[in-house]
Image 1 (spheres, rainbow, N blue to C red):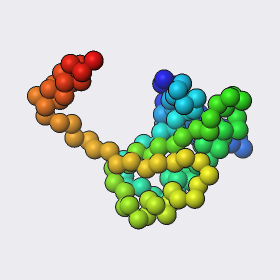
Image 2 (image 1 turned 180 degrees about the horizontal axis):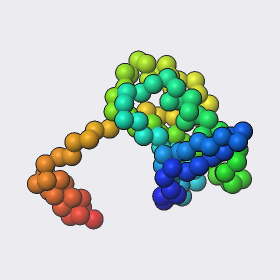
Image 3 (image 1 turned 135 degrees about the vertical axis):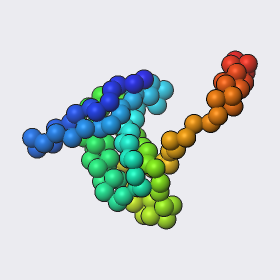
Image 4 (image 1 turned 45 degrees about the horizontal axis):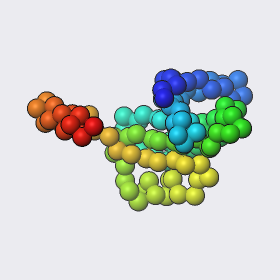
Length: 118
């Protein structure tokens, strides 16, 4: 479920904002998403890892699982991403997104196919 966007956290009297926060009821885990309109940078993992540690310590309930972090970026170098994300205690993933949607007709057909399968 959607918790909110630009969720403020305070560390040492400094405000930071998580772009999007969801809660997965099945996983019993917060999902923190950072949106980057550029290529993945080394600092992105540190930023999101900080937010995950905050949620784990300050927000999670006793029966919650550790939060999961996702960095959505316009581009990523697979080798660099592996070194950036490997070895973090928290679950952090970097995914490439696109600004281009499929053609309207193709999108309508896909939605119709999904609805027929139900």
